[in-house]
Image (tube, rainbow, N blue to C red; front, side, top):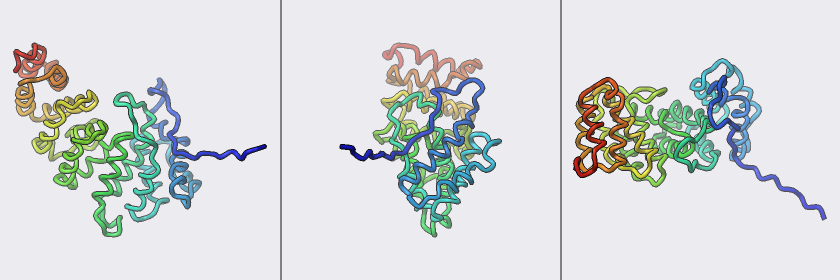
Length: 294
C-alpha cells in the first residue's frame, strides 16, 4: 500500500563555509541563495507574501554592494513587500526565524543571513509614524532579543541607544540577568562606544559611566564569550578615558578570580603593548596569585 509522503516545511539558513575562504567576500553570504531562504522562511508564516516579487526587488542592484550595504538593501526590499505597519512586519520576521544558536563561540558566517533583519529593525523600528502612531520600542526590543540569539543585535541596538538611551539601557540592564549568554553578551557588546564596523555612540565616547553598571554585572559572567566582550568594551573606554578604565581595572583586581584576571589582562593589552605604565602594572598584578591581589 502506497502512503502519501508529507513534506515538512521548516525555516532554513543558506549554506556557508565554516569560515571565509581565500578569494571569498563576506558579501557572498547575502546572495541569491540567502534571498531565496529569506523568501522561503517568510512564506511559511505569511502565506500571502509574494516571494518571487521580493526576490526580484532584492536582486536588483545587489551585486556591487558590500555586505553591510546588502543588509540595508535587503531591509528596504523587505519593507516594500511586508505589511506597511512596522509592528506587523516585524512580527512576521520574528515568526520566520530559525531556532536559536546554542554554541557560544565560532558560530560561523552563515548567521550573517540575519543582517537584513537587524538592519530592518534599526532603519524602521524607531519611528512611530511607521507603526501607525504607536510606540515601536517594545516590539523592536523583542525583535532584537530574538535576533541576538541567532546572530547579534549589536549593530541595531546602537540606534536605540542613541535615540532612547535611558530606555534602552534600562532594558539591557534587565537582560544582563538573562539565561541566554548571547543576550547577556549583547548588553556589553552593543554598548561598546567604538564597536568595529558599527556606528559609534558619541554620548558613550564622551562619558562611558552610564554603561559601567552593566559591565560590573557581567565581569564575572559564567561564559568567556561574555567576559571577552566586557574586556573589549574596557579596551574601548581606555582609548578615550584611560584613567577611568585603569582605575576600574585596579578596583576589579581586588579579590579577582583567575577568569577575571584574564579579562583584565585582555582589556589593557593594547595600551600595554604601547608601554603605558598603568596598563603594564595591571597586567603584572593580574598574573600574581589571588592572595596577593585580594
